[in-house]
Length: 345
Ligand code: FNR
Image 1 (cartoon, rainbow, N blue to C red):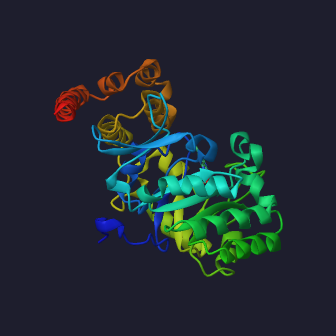
Image 2 (tube, rainbow, N blue to C red):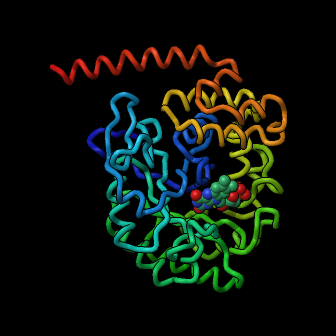
């Protein structure tokens, strides 16, 4: 059992875990809570860029019981979290600067279980300014960032990398990463230039596990290797890794984390919508996530109706959940009035 009393929560252990990978636009609070409910041990938030986080204030949202990191005058937070995930959520940042990284880590340190630095994303929004996969060719910068974070925060620090063209370079890189004192390393077993359709290099992940003694989190298996829960263990064995991290397999159906087996997409969507309503998730973000779950069914009449929705309530109508939505809104309004009364006293 973990205890939050007096801030003495136990340190996140990265060994033998199944994790929700960081995914931009997917890894927002409702999806993370859903993955945890279904059986994920650890959940990563979407990559959040240091510059953006540094413009945020930390706000305790009494109405929703969340902690929000929000820019001045903005309607929606850049990062929202809550007590339910506090011991299991990892905050992933995009950064190319040790001091900025530390400032962001300090800002969220009390509200999350771990800090991760994205060193694998090849997309332009990540590599510009030397972030993401651009860091892979800058070991000195990697060392500075990770050392500064490890020395500067009290929670575990990790990073997520891709593999390099030469095996010996990859192994030198992970040794350097380990020497900084990080708690684990997540490895997406593909080269920077490779796309998801290319097979994952399980053998390279295996060589990494034989080179470092910190837990290795194997990633890149969705689709070809991992289609259902049992495949997670097979991927763990094929890579020799301690833990496995899932991105696309979870995006398609979050219930992949259920040892009892996957649920039909409609059930997952209803479970998702409940959290989206409870935590007032941005409608556009929820719509995007529902579209990923629907996949090919996006062409169906209901998929087309989803495309036209603009609010959570409209989405709820498509899955017979308007009653739940309306109930929550009534409760929320009562709570709002109660909080206002208290403030007025
Ligand atoms: C990603 N990925 C990713 N990686 C990362 O470190 N930070 C991020 O924010 C994102 N964002 C993201 C969004 C979406 C929609 C996808 C599909 C992927 C990469 C992801 O975490 C993972 O490394 C790869 O998808 C490979 O793992 P799977 O999909 O084979 O399990």
